[in-house]
Image (cartoon, rainbow, N blue to C red):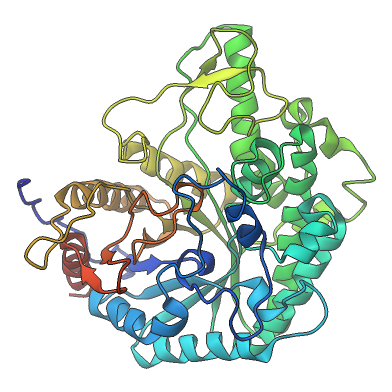
Length: 467
């Protein structure tokens, strides 16, 4: 058995008296199941998972963690952690099954019940409007490659905020638009599974426009803190000092980080970004007023961090698959990604210093509060032994990254929260159920929930921060 991790010594208060808040998170398609109940329409992930070979183990979110029926049990698990936040996402096709038009009240009723359950347990419900489950009819009409999807997203946001805005004060519009845009429309490894190269830049702009339009609608329904959650990454080039290496480094940074931050902070797409994404210079795509609407549209920036990105020019023939995300960086010269040990079970390099760097630089770049909205590790902890899952490796990962968050905060970055991904072992997108990130083990045979050692460790940290 692994050596138990020592407790993390946390500074409980900063000079202004504030403390770091803790939470945990899930996403609708990954945990809810019940994909054909109470009027829910099909999503792009329902369609994608039905495609042979799209998901590693051929699975789907049809049942997932059955949280649609077990939400009270899951709310109890969150409360048992003693954390402040529960971040969940709302399934667009559960609320507006066709993406536009008729609203399904039974879907809104479910989220009503969930929010009330969280509040009854003293938790802060934090809602994400889009965690990738686009209604399939919208994808059939062009998906995020067309402007109408951004407009439909705003209408959907208004419906949800109108129902839940009296009890939900913190909203995220989008989760990781890089994955939705570039993994979905360029690399084709996420839903909707399209490999259309530079067309993905159109998706990126429409996602950002959708964010801005939705944020405006949410705020119109009452006081709300509205942000966007980005999987920004520290770009640590493995090769430097050559034109080829510089072009790769700048291109990767442009499509991973600046395509989102530049319009939010500067109201513009910079020259380096336009060099790899010339579509963003098209006035038919980026219309007058779009960038002005996006500028200043976030009250905070959420950061999802798992691993640094170490690009280096490709050494072989020009390729579309020289790095794990395949063609997810259209317009960037061919490159490889270097991954150093140690790594998690999903093959992602472990380096907590990347989180500290990212928090500090993002706070400086944006002048906004930053929140760690996802951080966690896939570890090979599938067995329950004597009623326990002893995931000391996950505890070590969380300990180091929580310490990095505290260090960034102590150095002056306005870091408000640290949210662990994820509460439950769940459907991990293209990996299916082969990778486990949860604080709680799920037995797929009967949905039994078993809190892991990491669950109890997080509870200890939450208690220390509340002391």
